[in-house]
Structures are given as C-alpha cells and as structure tokens.
Amino acid sequence: KRLILVGPPGSGKGTQSPIIKDEYCLCHLATGDMLRAAVAAKTPLGVKAKQAMDKGELVSDDLVVGIIDEAMKKPSCQKGFILDGFPRTVVQAQKLDEMLEKKGTKVDKVLNFAIDDSILEERITGRWIHPSSGRSYHTKFAPPKVPGVDDVTGEPLIQRKDDTAEVLKSRLEAFHKQTEPVIDYYSKKGLVANLHAEKPPKEVTAEVQKVLS
Ligand code: AP5
Ligand code: ZN
Ligand code: ZN
Image (tube, rainbow, N blue to C red; front, side, top):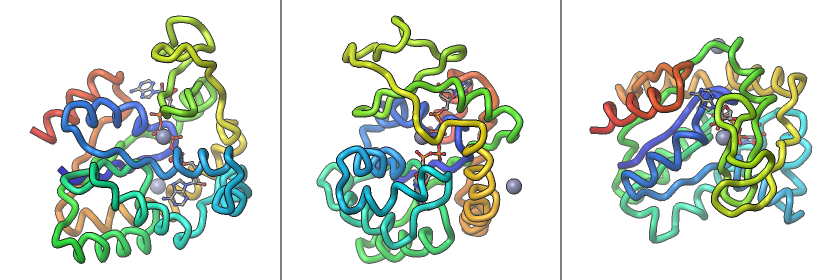
C-alpha cells in the first residue's frame, strides 16, 4: 500500500508508523527523522534545515521534496510506502503526485490523525526519542522499561530540541495554516480516512488496521 500519515505534532504518527510498517512490510519515510539525522551529521542539508526546525517552522519545499525524491528510489519503496510528515504543503502534495505519476502509481490512502490541539502539549513535552531508530516514548503514556534508555538497543534516549511548549505553538500554527489544506487536497480525491487520534495507542492501531484491511 501507498500511505500518507498526516496530523499535528504529537498526534501519534511516529508511534503508529512502525506497527503499520511491520504489518504491511513497507518502506517508512519520515521527513522529520531524516532532517534531524542531517542536522546531527551537520550535512549541507542539515545546516540549511536547522534554523527553521529549531523555530518550529517548515523547511523549504525544495529541500524536502529533494529528500523524498531521493529516498523513494530505494528498492524497498517500490511496492509501497508510508510517508510520515510528508507532504506538509499543497505544493509538496502536487510534487508527490507528479513523482508517482511518472512511475504509473498513486497514493492509496491518507490517514488523518485528527486530534484537538489542547491534548498535544502534554504529549510533546513528555516525549523521549531514540534518535537512530526514531522510536518514541512518553514519561507518562509509554514509558521505557528503564527510564532514559531505549528498550531495544539499550542506548540513551533524548528529548527533541523543538519539543518545548513555546516551539509547539509555532509548529501548530504551521500545521493549521500550511498542512490542513493538504488534508482538503486529498479529501477532494476521496482518499482521507479520519482517525480518533486522542484515543490510547492500541485503539488507534485498531482503527488503522480497520481502515487498511
Ligand atoms: P516531524 O518530526 O515530522 O514532527 P511533527 O510533525 O511535529 O510530528 P511529531 O513527530 O512531533 O509527532 P508524531 O505525530 O510523530 O507524534 P509521536 O507518535 O512521536 O517534523 C519536525 C520538523 O521537521 C518540522 O517542524 C519541520 O521543521 C521539519 N519538517 C519535517 N517534515 C517536513 C516537511 N514535509 N516539510 C517541511 N518541513 C518539514 O507521539 C508524540 C508523543 O505522544 C510520544 O511521546 C508518544 O509516546 C505519545 N503518544 C503517541 N500516541 C499516543 C496516544 N494515542 N496516547 C497517548 N500518548 C501517545
Ligand atoms: Zn513524528
Ligand atoms: Zn485548524
């Protein structure tokens, strides 16, 4: 399947992705994870992206479309994919359509992680991530077995620089202004499935499975 996950910061996209990926054996591309890796490695891309990310603003369409274009060439992404955090502007959505058209394919489904803004601050400020895998934990909702340590690798967890209440405000503003129109774009094509993203993780997973079955 060719899937897009869309929703505000903290809505659970990154939490559900690995579960969907394991079940449907797809390639999982998260532009946020890829950009954070580039920032950490101080690549030219990372240097360009860092400022916008730290402020909670979107990185330019050209940079992000370039990353996705490159990543989608991987053999594992030929049969299907999950895009987490892309497209986030209507321009990105149009570019993706063009990219897929060239390959004679199209998007199958857009999972909309619908949730009220008021829930998101607690989710974001309590999040701890394992940077190399993108796995996320939450001090209250999804604690690791050992505090501050990744369950799988035993490596240390970190907090994201943009996971503050202050930067969250800008990220939410970017979501409502620039990304909600993307949901309308796909709604007009009849591709959107709305999830109740405020429910506990397992219930959200069940909703996802229902939509995809
Ligand atoms: P990105 O990394 O994509 O961040 P985001 O969209 O803000 O989303 P998050 O990762 O914060 O939320 P999530 O939905 O994955 O939540 P999670 O599952 O971890 O982007 C970061 C930045 O990169 C952007 O600001 C931008 O600058 C740039 N960027 C990226 N893509 C771009 C693009 N296409 N164009 C331009 N710029 C781009 O869950 C959050 C927490 O809640 C976790 O602790 C989790 O354990 C917990 N949780 C999850 N689900 C539940 C639940 N059901 N109940 C209770 N707790 C839960
Ligand atoms: Zn995420
Ligand atoms: Zn809105």
